[in-house]
Every structure is written in C-alpha cells, then in structure tokens.
Image (cartoon, rainbow, N blue to C red):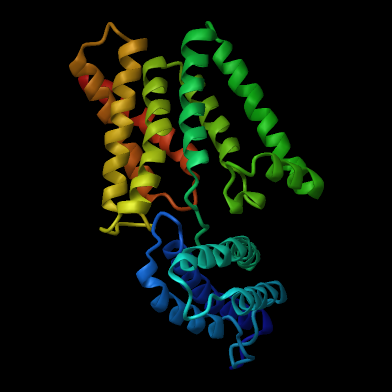
Length: 327
C-alpha cells in the first residue's frame, strides 16, 4: 500500500530531524565554552558527513516539506561557504570555527521552526551567553526586592498582572507584525536566545510565573523560588557547558544540576536571611533545599515547558510541600 503524500512528507521531515539533531550536537561542541582546538580535525570530518546528509535526495519516503528542504539546503550552503580549511594556523582555528558557528546557529533555528510547522520537534540551542546569565541573576534579585520590599499589600498581584498582560500582548503583536518582532530581537539581542525570534520568549514565561507566585500570597515560598531561579539556572548553564561530562536527560549534566542546587540553595539562604530573619538558620536551609531540589529536577526533566515557568513554580511547590509536612 502506497502512503499518501502527507504521510510521506511527515516521514521525510522526521528523517530530516535526525540530521538536525546531529547538527545540534556539533553546534554544542562548537560552543565557546566547550571548544577544544585539538578536536577541530574530527569536527571537520563530522561536519562534511553531516553536510552530505543535509541534501536529501528524493526517496521512496518522499521529500521533506518545501520549507524544511529549503532550510536544509541553506545549512548545506553555509557549510560549503564557511567550513574552515583542514590546515589553519593555530591562532586562526578557533576564530574560523566560531565564525562558521555564528552563521549556522540562526539557520539551525530556522530549520527547527520549519520542522515544528511539520509537527516534528528538535531541541533549540542555548549558546553560552554571560550577559544573559548576569541579566537573569539581576532580574531575579530585583524582582524579589520589588515584591518583598517596595510593593505593599496586594500590589505585587496587580503589578505582576500588568507585566504579564503586557508581555503576552507583545507576544501576540510580534506574531502579527514582523517589524515588531525584529525590533524586539534587536533591542534584546545581547540577552536573547536565537529561538526566541519565533518562540514565546523567556521573559514572558517569567512574568507568567511571577503572577502565579504573587497569587499564592506566600512571600517566603516566592522569595525562595525566585532566588533559586535567579542563581541556579545561570550556574547550571555555566558549569554544565564548561565542565559537564556525566550526561543526564535532555542534554543536561550531573555537574550542571549539582551546580544548580548549590548555587540556588545558597542564594535562597542568603536572601531569606535578609528578608525573613525571624527564621532559624536550619529553617532557612531546609526551605532553600526544598525549593532548589525540585527546581533542579524541573530544569533537568522539562523539555517543552520553559525553565522560567517550570523552575519557580516547582520551587514554590517544594516549599509549600515542606510546610505541609511540618505542620
């Protein structure tokens, strides 16, 4: 029985996703935090093999959808044009490969978008971005000060609700107005991940999480959750990319998850020491760990839900569960 063209296209899109995931792995290997000059020769051989796989010929299973095929061709051309020579001066190796990577990352994300339209999921890239890490930490701590020190009574709910409404309005607007999307990506280019050009961005998920925490009206749980998010997520990213060797789920590493728990719990203990000094040191440590451990599990296991939503809500749930057990 001959499969319908739609089924054939779907199968071909799934086969293209296999190649895309291979490219995802190579781009991760090329990340500045993971780069090793002595791996350039092997990387070049793998990149050549992958380039050949990016040019799918018509087969019994059919061609991939036109958008996917166009993105595969684009990536193959970029590799042809930018692949560093086999022999380069030692001081040029890293720069040449990073130049190729800068060209491939947005093209890979466009392929991921085309595959998503064909209902095929491939992981997005999260390149090393220390500016984003600092922005993440500063934003989290600033929001804690805003909610716990500056805004009285029910004002955190109103302010979080206003920010959430604004963020989702912008999300809707940039889907309808390409110029708005381009302007937002240009404005936040130092902090944005490439995939946020076509996916809901992390700031929108963060404001949504913030509204949920405000509605709980549990200041200690919210403080611990935001502190864990502020410090744990950047620590996991930095340590995981540079030192991660023991692979766990969804590309995460044991080293990154351990860094998440240590940094997140430490930040939560310090923050609670300032804002909830009536709590004993033992209570602050217990609350911090109750927030950091489930948050690290959420960061490790969630794939389709953004970290900025999953982490704080999981952390707050952990604190509330601790309170329920102890009362």
